[in-house]
Image (cartoon, rainbow, N blue to C red):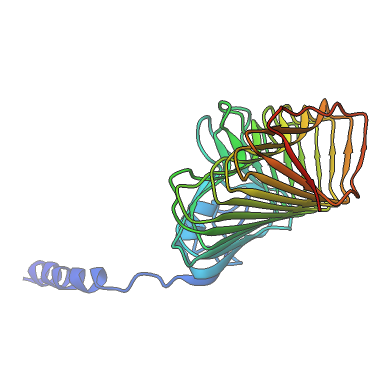
Amino acid sequence: MRKALLLAAIGFGLPIVSALPAQALSDRTWVSGLGTDSAPCSRAAPCATFAFAHGQTNPGGEINCVDAGSYGILDISKSITISCEAGTAGIFAPSRFNGITIGAAATDVVTLRGLDIDGLGGAAVGISVSQAKEVHVEKCIIRNFRFGSNASALRTAGGSSETMFMFVVDTVISDNSNGIQLGSAGGFKVVSVKNAIITGSTVDGIGLLNSNAYANVTESIISGNGGSAVNVAAASSTANIDRTTMANNATALTAAGSGATIRTIANSIFNNTSAFVFANGGIIASDGQNRTGGNTNGQDANASVTLK
């Protein structure tokens, strides 16, 4: 009888246990190189990966790093900040994979700060954005994404039809197939770059691949790239560049396509194989304050040059 009553009590208890509420998400979570993904992601008990911490963080919340570590690749689906300046916050992307993939809502804002994202020579894209309102990349290093000629450090997905704004500040982009690529199936794609270094790309430092793509570059260095420092490769796209050094590239500036426009002011353009290349009605507009030297100026018969 006692055994039967004990079993009955246990049986009645099971539904009570299963009905307990799930652990609430936090506005701030933590990861550590010594953490575990069975932990609650608190400061005292941090978890081990960005992916697990993302699932424990409220929309609009923040993930911080206790210390240096390798925190794994990540898919971001909501507004969130990842801020890690306590040490090297590493992401190693496996072959053919992305380091971070952002597919959030069109109203979401994502901030990535203090990350070292390494493609190890065979990964696809460091930060791939298919949808978000804004993406902020601050004090990051993105390198070694070279899986084919379209691999890149930062890229908007070609199928994206939403308007997106990206801000890249105090960041080093090195040794990728491409530095920054903006592709679009509609909407506007706008990237603003300040105090960045883009170097060692086998193709282009910055490439505007489709119409309605815009790049604003200031106080940066785009050097040592195998293609163009900046390539506006589509009609109705524009790059605005000021106080930036473009040196030792195959070409500094390429404008290809009707209405493809590059505006320049007070830049240093040195020792490129070609300073300017125009094609099919592309325009490079200069106020005459650029400093040039050691370049071969290449342009075709369809070139259009204006001074403004």
